[in-house]
Length: 100
Image 1 (cartoon, rainbow, N blue to C red):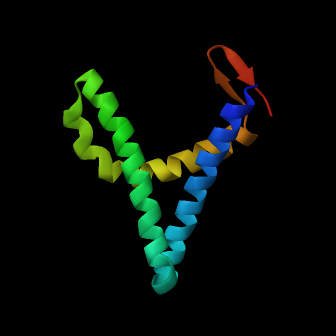
Image 2: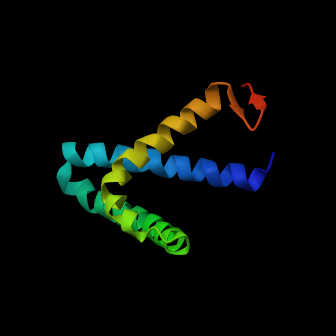
Image 3: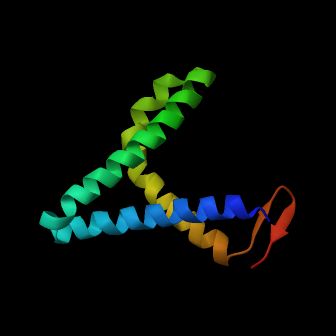
């Protein structure tokens, strides 16, 4: 319903798919893709850490930031999986059911 939000969510999803693909390919072809993969992970980690550090500072839960790095790999696959599920499977949110 909000085109700007939908475009933003789609771009975030595509960036995560791209990062997952680059990571897998960097293991297969480490020479040409390793630098690109590391740069992409660096950008993701910096952006996510900045957001989470701000949020945890406001809420006083900075002690949870030690989980940041281990959770990033899981977060990558979570975003991809939820994006796919939300696009093709019906779900319920705040009492409303969305069917595709």
